[in-house]
Length: 105
Image 1 (cartoon, one colour):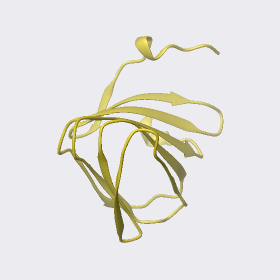
Image 2 (cartoon, helix red, strand yellow):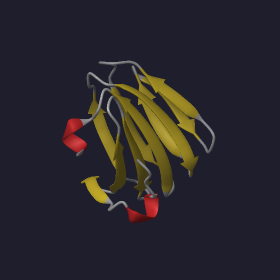
Image 3 (cartoon, one colour):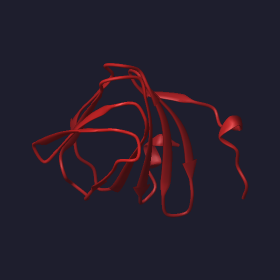
């Protein structure tokens, strides 16, 4: 299957987080455009997650440790680990989830 991000509709999954979702058999990829100051409250999920900062500056807390990430930075989030985040500037992020994030379909 071939796709283009230009043809995928964006969904506001949470306030300030606009995502284009790609779902494969065993994983989901989310391409986020994030408004400045938009926050993801602390949460955890069964999915393994890899976050890649593409543009902007993103503050991210994983297991109580807060760091600021910039373009090119990657964070690996193990299943069930508590995490949260805030866009310090407008951001573009890519998240990969395994298994598929069914609630994002």
